[in-house]
Amino acid sequence: MIAELNVKPIAIIHSGFKEKFGIPRQPGLATSMTATIELLSEFASAEAVKGLETCSHIWLVFVFSACVDKGWSPSVRPPRLGGNQKLGVLASRSPFRPNPIGLSPVKLEAIRIESNGIYLDVSGADLLDQTPILDIKPYLPYSDIIEDASFELATKAESLDLEVRFHPEAEAALHTHATRLNVPLETQIEEILRCDPRPAYHKNKQDERIYGIRLHDLNIRWTINSEYIQVSEIILDS
Image (tube, one colour):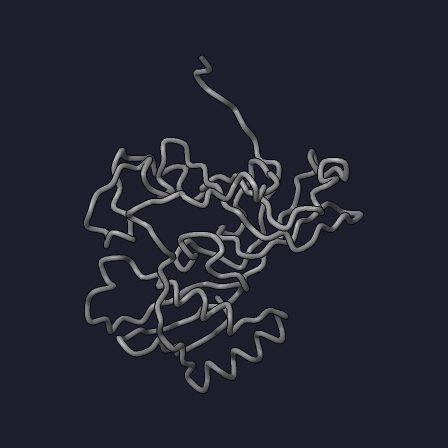
């Protein structure tokens, strides 16, 4: 029996998510969000990615690097269950695991083999910027889709059916930064906020708080009520 296993990252991801708060809790919920996987120099070989271009999607095996020093517990309080009900950690997607390893399927948009490295452009990733990638595998539709699979505690993706409104000043900033960053910023903000990043214990209360998420190099301030989500401010992150 192997008592300890040493692994090292083969790549690092560059994403617009600069902090944990605001990241969708599962992959594929913010499909407009793109990211770039940079293979580390030891593994940046064109031979290593040969044939990967035939894949529409890939699996990313990664480390919850922001949670490595947090330890783990045999039971957790999943946000999906309101943060009040305990569940075994192995029956959850909690990042606070015995080994803080995650698995995400993402869409492979492009492979770039350049003079300074090898890069994979992907969309739909739910990974924090600078997350280390342990492995990359092709997504196999005939094997990885299990049509009769079920999980009674999570039967569908959770998303708020609320309009996202922008304060006039925020809307002006939205267009300015979307052009500067060359990203579909309005769609990205709407997808992320409809995933409701608030802590579970805030969701069923009358909420007058002003929340903030960091996206790209921006700080986005927003509020929420029973009728709509209001983006009040979009400013450069200090």
